[in-house]
Image 1 (spheres, rainbow, N blue to C red):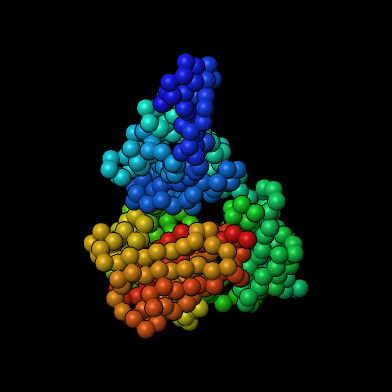
Image 2 (tube, rainbow, N blue to C red):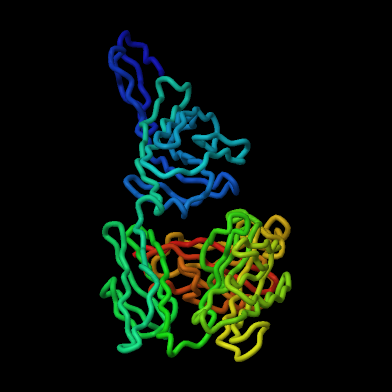
Length: 452
């Protein structure tokens, strides 16, 4: 403060950098804070990923595994310190005296973090200017929610296994969905799809998939097998199932073009081939090629890539890389008799997120590669920004929650066609997807979300 010589008055500084006449008995006015922006930071990569908006909800799986929140302060005065407080399932109070102002702290921009948890949160920041006493800024608070689809999302139940009636050639599926405000669709063989009823009547044998989703981008998938009338049955490989060879429990169906993350499912694995018309199937030949190779003939169910002893699965120790798996059923033992209808899938194996594997273009080992994907969430279009890549053609593919490839676009990377590409997402339903960019000995996966 600056005294002007009178007994009871002084000049008090205002938020506009001007001065006004004030009395000694008048409380000093707080300065209005022009702007504070909160951003969630991925504490593992130190990258800002989400700008927090008051009253917004954020999907847990779209956020980093370990997070921090940084306050970006824009004011007319030099900031002396910022007091931050986070309340909710993860909470902390911290005073930060230099930028970046992070609620869990940092070391020269290397952010500390906490495990991200679902729930209701409030984050507040109070900046202090000058000496930190008479120059306190206006506290800013943002309330937000992190929601977990596994807790609040719908649950699809495709119902029990069915067999087509030999007289009518039809059967009714018994699907159901637990949850509120959900939408659904059935998908099946020969392009079958419907969203009009949870209990459709179908006439083709095979695997039918029930997909349930809600307005919060939560989704759930379940499958049911429809067997043909026994009189019309031809051996056919229906699908592959990833199995935990330690517990002998199924992990999930193994779809085409999906990734097996060893850090999530462990290394004790096997893959089972499921057969349509098991009564007419006596053997199955399984052939694995790619990063590892293996050929095996199984003469009894379960038909497992690494074999089993009465359902006690042996272990296939997969290494990271790309694979192709083919299974063919036969009507007699040891691949004798007639061959049925085979099934071939491609899949990848990684130890952690695929982008972190060296053979998939690990950024730490290939620092020249820099892939940007934004905005997330996207609406009409998604931008893929490729910096310092090798010239050539790349493929951008989008997969749904069931692991099915639903969109593919070729990216020609050179000085003529450019290094930034737009992928049209206008026709995608609201939800969570996986983006895969591959080519020129490079492969990277990114989780994306679409909002409408």
